[in-house]
Image (tube, rainbow, N blue to C red; front, side):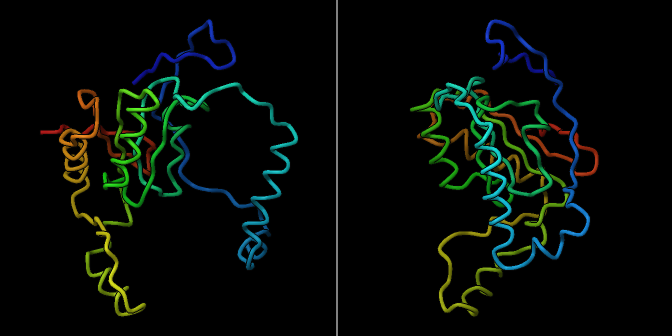
Length: 203
């Protein structure tokens, strides 16, 4: 798949992005494993990284409306580097992530705001292979109730067939009365071993 997208650095030109390659393993500097697992060390590492980032930061002059008018719903899995995998730059899209990348009421809330107030028109749904939700069941809610004394109101949204769950997510989007644009909704499964997207037929 190839996207033709406006360049942020040169708005008058178009750049071509090929979108299906990425690295799926995170790298940790040798010898730092103990340091980043100490209490508070991970957050301090992030805060320090932000200080360095802010030193060179300049306001890109963007507003909240995505340049490509697209919202991407995907799993929160740390192996998915969505911007790299989809050839996206800062400001191109809205990104909505949760466990499994499933379309829940809260995802519909975000998509509704994205479309009604911020101009998005297209929706891309991305699940992936070897997802942690495939190893869970709704019994997880019972386990939590036994542990903390309260049963969660939310569903686990676990699944066994990733393709079918993508289809279910597409259907939830297409039948929502709150969304303005449901004619361009496409679903994919990302392969964590190859970095490739496989499109799912909604039927």
